[in-house]
Length: 293
Image (cartoon, rainbow, N blue to C red; front, side, top):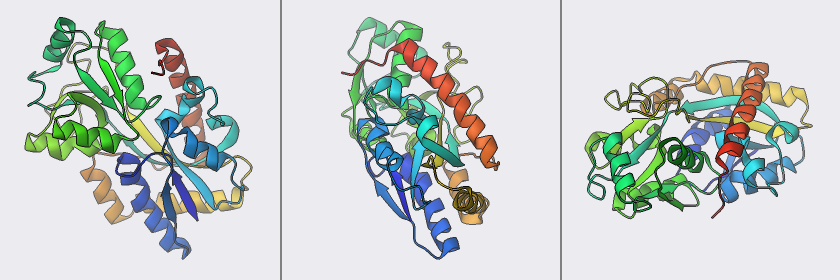
């Protein structure tokens, strides 16, 4: 069995895909190979799986970015609703704006916005790539606040995070699951979280609404998808295996450490959720425009 992660190694997609894949492989007595195929905001790997044989052996570990990919990439080669069948949710994680405090000396979101207004385009903000959720978050923040930032796209969130830590970047939007330890150690500073409620993992970090930017919610979720014509029987078995993995002690512990959450739910419920997310993020992406530098 082959699971395609459509982003480079080292990011949050790997963090959540690999423990579940290991458990599912043991359950089926058939190792699951997790393969990273990054590029074009996840659309290259997504296209590979959309064309795969629909036998339950090749699946996509997708995330929120793929809900609006056709808006951003006219030649993405697939549509999440048309070409895939949702199998199971894997994790949901809050996203926040994080800075390197030695590179950018601001204490909170108000200070960040003031610095950006004082020196337009002087603040370099990295993302996991053109057309990704992090890119959308940058565009949304600029449009909601009137600031101008310099967007620095990478080929994955892990690369952006490493450059932030090393001081090559001023800021990034990152899942809190990947930055919490750096924030707790003081190497990075989280300015705001893009959810409606604070995150227990970093309870002192305010929401964007609390920090003065209302209705700014861009959390990321991860899920497993199969090519559209895959029969129900292998999908039901896969769904059951993933759900069992998410209830397993070691996986639950990792998710808790990463500040991730997931609702154990039916395939139908997950499919309905994905359809709502496609409608929501497609509308937002069209509004913001997401320029492809």
